[in-house]
Image 1: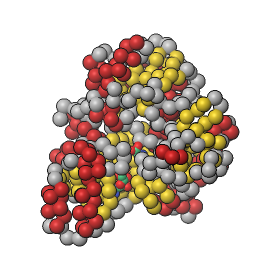
Image 2: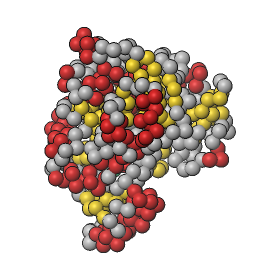
Image 3: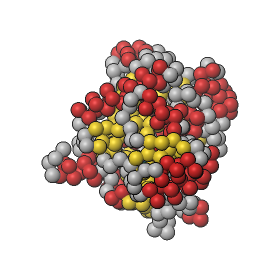
Image 4: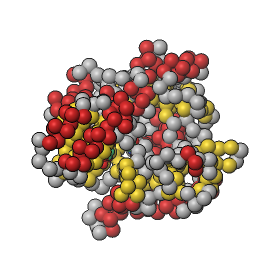
Length: 449
Ligand code: AMP
Ligand code: GLY
């Protein structure tokens, strides 16, 4: 770490609180544990595997909701927390960062107002329109009738119908034609209040990537890109999940694409938020799609993605506490943020039933964790796994993320899959995709990178 960065944070023995329950939280805990400044880490709600790679003590609060704002503030006071890293969408919506700051507790994570860019997709689309940020054609609707009338006036096409509010990453429903779009509109009520307002948007065809920006409300820094795999099964088949594997760096994001994305999207967004009095402090997450060489916004989020954080946070060379502290204090431009040049692939393990409810299968033994955590070039980030004694049990949804690293995506993915093959879940109930990173593997194999 450059000497001037060290001088920025003089104190030792800092306590950090990470607000997240999944693999993203595990990756952040691991990185904070490597900081010379940090002596212990709290995680709300956290999970039993948060401490798997941690060099420092980790305390979790498994029964606490990330939206329990006043309780979290009390814990911060009692435990003398020095810095809170808010990384869960519903905590942002609940105004956790605002309340922490009001109580004199240092925090990164956007304010409720700045986070509206994630928790209100209708507001976000109108914001992008106002600031001329490239996006698909869209229409915001407040009733079933409004959406159906709109679709009936359009010529037959492909659409996405999206709940405006938070929906656990499952609120975007594809519709291959107008008839299907009307069915999707009728499904919006399954999202409760989150689906009261919804957005109908043109289905863009192209290659997607996600991009992550550190923001301190004054300046910003693009820290990296990844390519998520959202569908449950190989070759992008099956239902959308929150993300079931990813790779970095995506070769499709050539320097020219990155420059265009910065100029046309990121700068306009950060400046626009400032103009609206919604200064953004935290991680701005762009979900983007490239259509005939031009980049469009699919969505913005106000936090790290998962499993993207699991491949991008380890790439940060700096002491994460120093970087986060600078973000909290508006000194990001003084820090030279560096990332390593390794490729990383995350393979996400789930039960076969993910993302459908799996209550009957919850509690099955999971085997392989202790063997895999010792493989060089492989890091395990736990999510929905509980530990009793020295045994591990699967929960529902995403269980674990295996991250392999190497000099390119082929090497990184080989590592990840070598580790994945050592896992099993009682009842032959383990699922993972076997094609993560396939686009770049093919590009490298045909020499077309
Ligand atoms: P979201 O919940 O908005 O991230 O959407 C989930 C996934 O649906 C995205 O990663 C895309 O693959 C797809 N998607 C959403 N909106 C669009 C769109 N307008 N055009 C094409 N694909 C989309
Ligand atoms: N991987 C997608 C997300 O975190 O929303």
